[in-house]
Length: 53
Image 1 (cartoon, rainbow, N blue to C red):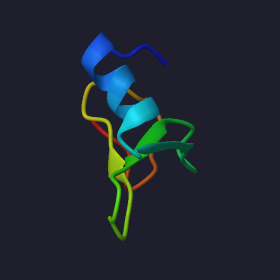
Image 2 (cartoon, rainbow, N blue to C red):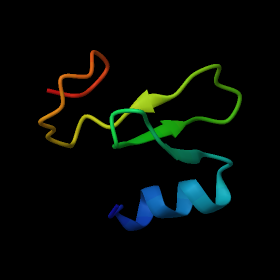
Image 3 (tube, one colour):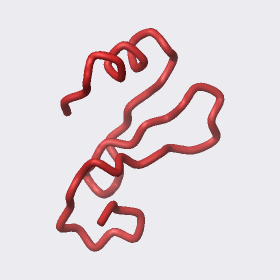
């Protein structure tokens, strides 16, 4: 997965986490958050209910 410099730095230094979701795409977990945030800058062919369109 490619990230711009700002977001790459946030992942490494800001406490964010990246996990691979059941839909096969990355999901982001913000520090202190209770759940993951899906990436909206992606396309998918999966029918998974939580997948980005």
